[in-house]
Image (cartoon, rainbow, N blue to C red; front, side, top):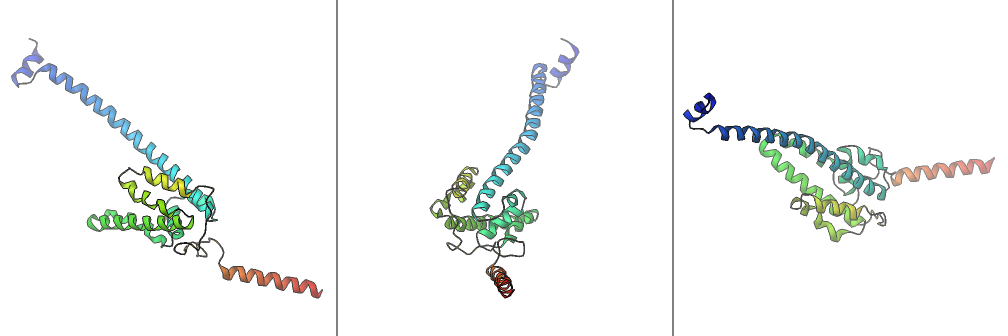
Length: 198
């Protein structure tokens, strides 16, 4: 028996067992490094896919697609398209507070589902709304299916269906309000009258 085996034996440990544990620790380190690389890759892929879906919905609503690529702002607009305040997007930042954060996350998710339902109504797809909350069970897969169905290019946006969109005419610079349109039309009429007099 060599010295290391005697030492391990005196403590009731088999040297071979100790040696195999070392390789499993190295294996765990490899898995840990793979997870450190995999988690950001999945997060980036999810962000890109969601931004593409937001862009499709924003185009249907007549908004510029670049807004879909701005984090947090894209969800703010999503809530407003659904007729709810964009401030709901700030609720996940409260999750730092233990109990209040839990309830804030639930409120955020519920109003995200409400906004999704209203947006679904505006494109005539209210019957597939259940796919959004079902995403909790399916790890988001059904939510992606909902976004794909709603963002389909064949759909037509009808803002009169469902709850009125708050994205129109807000100070953040969305579509023009009726008042702005009437003012512009009045200016055009004045210019035409001035040209007729000359």
